[in-house]
Image: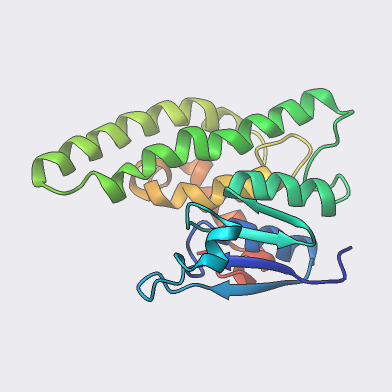
Length: 204
C-alpha cells in the first residue's frame, strides 16, 4: 500500500477522473484530488503541461510514475494495488484476456461513440444523425453485453473488477439507448451505483 497519497488531477467529480477515484476508493488507496479550473487556464500552465502535455484530465502522480488516459490509469492502479482482486493476474490467461478486452472496450468502443453526443450536436440535422448513430451502435453493444449480464452480476465470471468500474462510469452517457427498458443493464447499473465506493467517489 502506498504511504504517500496519489495525486489525482481532474476538473470535477464526474469527468473521466470519476472511474479513477472510484477504483481508488474500492482499494482504499489514499489520494488527493486536484481540481483544475479550465476557464482559469489551469490546465495550460507549464507545471501541469509537464505532467500532461495535452493539458487534459485525468492525470495521476504516484511516486515517480506520471500517467494519463483513464483506462491506462485504472489498469496500472488495479494491477499495483488490488492484489489480484480487481484485476486478474497474468497467470489466469483467459480471465485476464477477457478483463483486458472490457477495459479497452469501455473507452475504445463504448465511450468514443457516446462522446459524439458531446461533440456532434451543433445543428438539428447533425444532432439527429448523431443520435441515430449512437442508437444503432448501442444495439450492437447490447449484443456483447446483454448475454453476459443476463446470467451473471458482473462482466467477469470471477466477480466485480475494475472492468465493471470502467463500464459503469461510461454507460450512463447512453442511458436512453443502453439502460432504459433493458433489464440486464438496468440491474447491472443499479447494482454498481449502490456500491459504497461509487457513492463516496460521487461517480453518479
